[in-house]
Length: 341
Image (tube, rainbow, N blue to C red; front, side):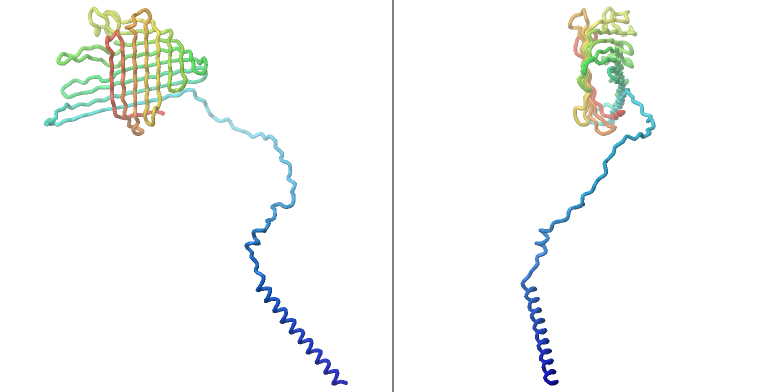
């Protein structure tokens, strides 16, 4: 009996061991099958991934409250100035030198010319005040000749206006014009003849009327009531038994009532190119049309750099009291130009 029992135990143990080995082999086969047949594409899965929302859970925000707060501010020491000024100073010169044996010939010469343009403005609506002072003087010296004046002018214009509408003003103005130095008429080989000096002639013009100013560049004055006084304080320049500058000999003063139109244009017409013009029309009452005066002043300046400029200045004048023909001057200069501000 004991032998049979041991035999049965051994048989059951063999069967258990066999079944365990067979289960392990089957599981290995299944794992190999799974590894061989299932391929996972992670890139494809990432395309279908849904990112979780930020702050997925709702939050309650506190209400925003705005309330005024008084902030102490110290008083700033700022001042508003209604005055504006502009200064232009120019100095131009030229020089030429020749050796004694220069075959083409020539004369040693030196010329110097200076100008100052000072403009002061006061603008506080509706009042407008403008004062402009123009000073010009130049001389040239050639070898074996006395120096001669090439440019000479004093002009001072003052205008006050009150605004009537957007583009129209009512104005009153007074201006003064004369020259610094003596002026001569040269008729070589005869000695020079003195024909002008300071306040011989000199002009003072008062005018009231209406002014049209559509922009900063253009200005038109219509002087319905204008008076001009002509002074010749040195009577030695007056020819005998005739009139000069509209004044008879032994007289130093003449007054005229007239209608006047003054137009100015001042603007940068291109880069570094500036044009300034002034035209004045003077129509005296009670005189023939031949006594209507015209004067045009124009300056075209080109800026080379901050200090150097080239300018051409021209003046056209018709004044029957000084000449029965049109008078004109022209001056081309190259030199130093200073502008402030």
